[in-house]
Image 1 (cartoon, rainbow, N blue to C red):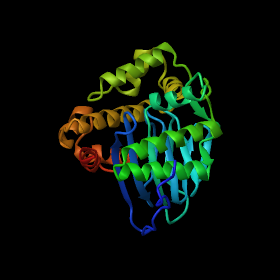
Image 2 (cartoon, helix red, strand yellow; image 1 turned 90 degrees about the horizontal axis):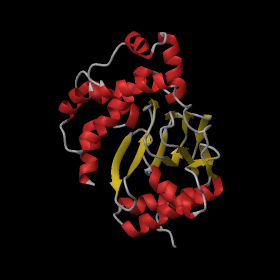
Image 3 (spheres, rainbow, N blue to C red; image 1 turned 120 degrees about the horizontal axis):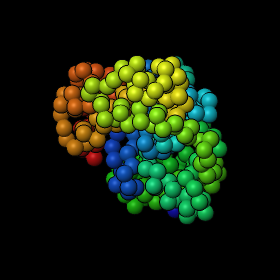
Image 4 (cartoon, rainbow, N blue to C red; image 1 turned 135 degrees about the horizontal axis):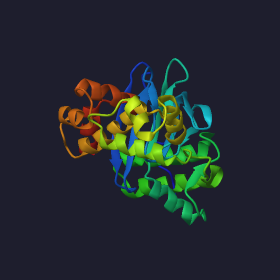
Length: 285
């Protein structure tokens, strides 16, 4: 398939940060992001989806389960579902990228077509693959123009190319350690008590462990300590409510943040945009 002619990124003012999320109907349950970040820094966080980011300018540096990566133009920053990672500029001028967030089922379907039996993983997180990046950037730009057939075709082609060149079946080493039953119960309790979470001492007593032992076991199982995991759940729940059209001030209270500025602060640390901008962009799309 011939790629759109304008697959090369346009020159952007390196001093200006910009970011926009939207939904891509060409792949089920897939969000897209186009952004340039300079001073924005992402805290340790996760996504329930795969993250496939094509760097179009500058350098992104980030930590992940396998260590630390620096990725520049022609490279991809790839993170698996629920994999804890960060993100910040690797050079003073920041970085620009286009990102697909495909649902696990989408990537698994493409993997099965290639003969992969398990959930797809990758041989590396920071991947230099200019041809794969070119195809996926073309898909992303076509999606931005509303060209659904071209975008969906190129997106599937690009993900398949990525799996062929750098894919593997995920094993137990890719994800979190298996949680002990008492630690899994603590996770469930946090999900149930977003508004009035227990203290660490109360969680430890509930699990029958010491506070330090619980924090260490929880982080080993889920990649984050209990308090950070709680904020991750809150942000995920807030995203779902915002997509339902709920007002940000109501969402903040419902998921346990003190007020809308508190929600905004954590939302930006996880997604790079404030909740109202995220909601407006997704609704326009």
